[in-house]
Amino acid sequence: PPERKLSASFFNMTESKGLFKRSRTVLREILELQDASAIFNTQVTVCGWMQTIRYQGQSMAFVELNDGSCSKNLQVILDKTYADEGVLEDAFTKGGTGVSVQIQGEIVESPKSGQLIELKAKTAKILGGVDAKSYPLPKKALTLEYLRTLPTWRIRTRTMRAVQNIRNTCAFATHSFFQGHGFKYVHTPILTGADCEGAGEMFSVTTLMHAQSKLSDIPTVDDKGEEIDFKKDFFGKSVSLTVSGQLNVETYAHAFADVYTFGPTFRAEHSNTSRHLAEFWMIEPEICFATLEDDMSLAEDYVKYCVNAVLTKCAGDVQILTDFYQRQYTTAKKQGKLPKDAQPPARLLDSLQLLVGKAYKRLSYTEGVELLEKEIKEYRAIVITPEEKKAMKAKDYKKKSKGKHVFENPVFWGCDLASEHEKYLTDKIFNGPVILYNYPKDIKAFYMKMNDDNKTVQAMDMLVPGIGELIGGSAREDDYDKLIKRCAELKMETEPLQWYLDLRKFGSVPHAGFGLGFERLVMLTTGMSNIKDVIPFPRSYGLCEF
Image (cartoon, rainbow, N blue to C red; front, side):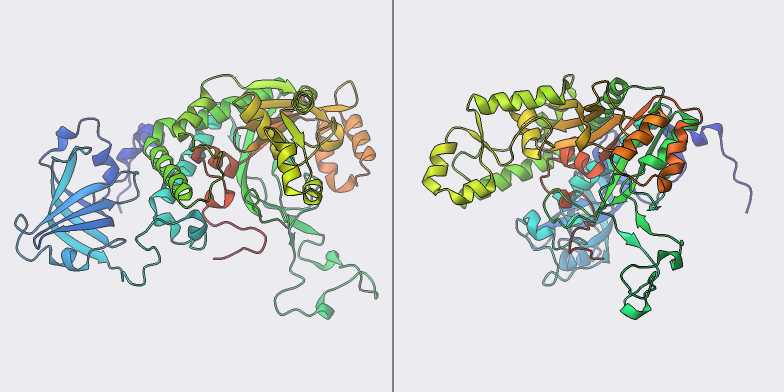
């Protein structure tokens, strides 16, 4: 074939629209035009899936068509008196929700209120039919709980398309933000021989056993058979799926200065709550020649950038989700499934604008704990543990908790703040995001830089309304001797981490970074309350389908 010559603009992302031409018109290009009149009387070919079809007599039908390119649907008029005889017959007899079609026709001004244009079909070709009786998505309001049982089908609903479109926007915004600030994107390994967090909740990777293996097939270090001999495994050592790319990306930070990683991570927690996944995505930037203050500013600006991208690019999706939450509330209220004091859901748009409208409150961990203790001391909140509640009579619990916010976990300096404490700070006290910093060393990781008081480390957590912790980060300990001392305090084996420790021996610099669970960011920007609803194929304890 002849050589393809590319212009200088080939590598300019703003020019990329000219590189690939479809044989159809994408609905987004029709529905999101600033001046719809510019395409009146234009002949187009569109493809997509019927969302609904409504018949008017024997010769006319109205189709809502969507091709996944935007949240809006295009109304298509199937009028047998307008098209050639017989060409619309298949669309009339075989049309229905989920049916895929190719339609050629004319863009005309719509007389219907709320839409500017519609398509009058000249031809309609069924590409893929649907047996309505066996279609997995019935024509009724579907709950999120029900949709979780249909992970391969739920993306065909407006609600889940809106969620995943916002997820896509946040992913693109992540790369745009860091690339725009000169960060290098580093692909850190999924397989690791180190436990970054020291939590021990890691998935082992081995070739020593498979589904047909017997216990006698697994090599052990001695005849007692009490310990597996991983020296005979594929890598000659124990290897796991990573819980974080941070330690690896720090090596590249010491060459590029500003780097980030964005990839899948894994944690083997035996928990199946609305906040837990076994497989999730992490965004972990690392900045050299930087302080904790720089780290907090980077985190705040990044979150605001992503939220603003959703506000500017996903307005239709935000409205779809707002309407969905309102329907959920109304239905639950009618069915008597809500407590008497339940409030209507806040508009998602308002919640998102709150995240970009002002600077995030910053205060030390100590100040945060003192505020919570003050709330309890002044009887606006109370601690009643699950054990205490179980031992109380219902009327006693009601009397003791009346007019107060109930915490299930105690608050004291040195505690690892629970999600309920974090959300109280954001939702009740400050009505917006909060960044806590300078945490007790005993509840944070070994690599965090110690403060002069030798009790706290330069760690920071960003807390956001409705979720709690969104980001966790710190200034890293850049002094080799201090880091070795810290490892000794924690009785850590340093040999597997020597490669990481050695970064402090050769050209070490002050550096900092943070980790953000991407699914929590998507929860924040979509308003979803269950983390399993914001990832395409959730994997959690007891759940790994497809």
